[in-house]
Length: 337
Ligand SMILES: Nc1ncnc2c1ncn2[C@@H]1O[C@H](COP(=O)(O)OP(=O)(O)OP(=O)(O)O)[C@@H](O)[C@H]1O
Ligand SMILES: [Mg+2]
Image (cartoon, rainbow, N blue to C red; front, side, top):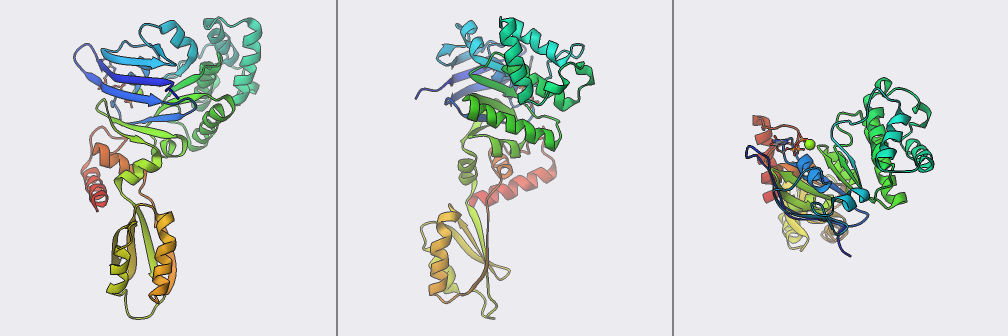
């Protein structure tokens, strides 16, 4: 299957010489929720703007459904919806009037606007408030209206630049629900940028980590986490006064899935590439060696660890603080083990 969004060495140098996007290669499959995760100034919005034909690349190529973003702009624009980072709705109009305007820009008939306008407003829970002026809407409502406006022409691909920036937890969760729904019920491909780790982790099929205009890592959230370090399994034994025997630790080290095994504070710590697969044979080995297990727990590295590992800085800050450097060192140390 060919990719619905493709970029080859896509590059943007702004007048004045800022290299905002540096030879990015991308390939997003139809129906994917693809996330671009990066700190301020990483080049996320610039990449999106080139893909949606609002900014000319300095070098490189991008195609949407096979159409070139420079030479086939008209065709590309019909296929996509774009919700910019800054809220673009007109606050002196009502919610409905905003949609009407958007529908007209896409040359939809009055009948189509009526039908689809209702559909998209219901989708974002604004149907009841459609006749109120947007200046009376909350930030979350404005963003939802913005998303509705990006959907009125039923795009195949939706580009969302920071769809949940600055919104409260409940509104963010609601927007995630809409995004998932767009993919599952409307088979839409979604390309989004975000600062939020949890969002990228829960929502995206694949994530590209971008920093200084370059893709530093790309994969499913799980692949990215695994690339940094394995699962950490902690096993506590029944009290028997003997401590954990060398024999146990040495025998576990021979397991192919076990990368590291050591005793810490009377507990057995095991680093493994895949905890789910490794735990059953570990338990049966412990049983054979006569060790009685009291409890077992498993922790995965977070996307935070992944981000620090690949970019060397924390996501929300432009410059890392001394504390961030400490965390980065810890993450790197963990990853090297
Ligand atoms: N119009 C412009 N002219 C010159 N430089 C620009 C322009 N727009 C963005 N830049 C620079 O390009 C780089 C990438 O900016 P961009 O807005 O793409 O980043 P971003 O990842 O979207 O950041 P944020 O998370 O803050 O939205 C930054 O260094 C920024 O200062
Ligand atoms: Mg941006």
